Length: 388
Ligand code: PMP
Image (cartoon, rainbow, N blue to C red; front, side):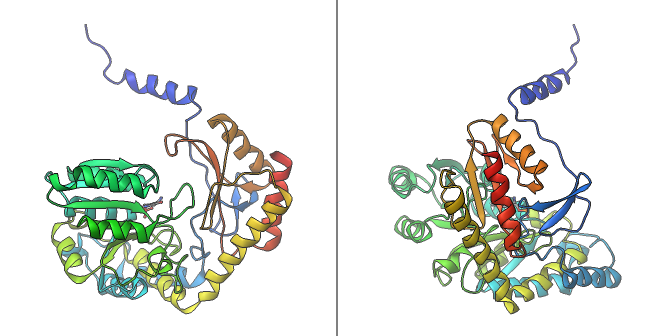
């Protein structure tokens, strides 16, 4: 008796709805910035990863337009065939300079950089130990690699050590994976402790600097620089789509590592090279980050000002521990997070609800930008006072 092999899709969607986990898109109808046009009205934007306000910067736009005029819209092939332009190499050299590494390799997204690097570095005979709160791209990279994967509790060095003591010697190579700034919490990985364990157990360490590049460290190199570990061998991944205001990803590290990835990372070899527009915009962003440290200073001034306002005016609001521009406050259910997100939007504040399965517990996630005005941060706190 034939049954519809696709019937399960609607049933699964119904289950997603029942759990209040259903997601849909909302269209922004303006340039990115501290305020955006959403559903026909201007809202203050606390939902963006554009930490330095560069995605709408005229200089990035002009760089993208000029590159499009010169090289066209598409790169027309993979880097090893017809897709490579001198612009890609310039961007890689600029990223290596920002990250203080020997070399860098640009991928078409941060997600692809993680998939490709992890799949190239380890295989069936190897072990991956991974923080339970790591980004989806690290988790899926681990699955793609075919290595044995063990998760340790969030930032728990003792548990990581126990796992390494129990399992390390059974495997050829071992790779420790961690976000540096945890994207849905805002806290930092315990990098010095991770590096010590990596050395003790002869493991490679890969840190995902997606939310740290341009944001943390004396020169904006990221969390690795923040912890003064820039001269230690490790594998740094990042994205061009957050503080760099463009699209694409990168791996930064020593020359041999980068050379190896050019020969072995499947998501670099078998995908079309980053477009000229995205490449040129990201290159302009790296230059601006290096030339204009005051943008990073404004970002941190805003983060500290907002934390201070919350502590003074909302003493009962519990923020999750954060050392980044990502500030989250937990809510008891997916439904209450959704309701809060809607109420904030009605008050002119765009701050999304983040729900399972993205995170174990629901929350509102606020991300601060360098270009927020003090009055906009005050408006956020007033809206929270009205709704909490
Ligand atoms: N890693 C982390 C920690 C992220 O938050 C993201 C983006 N959400 C990525 C990787 C993927 O980067 P991209 O958007 O460039 O694919």
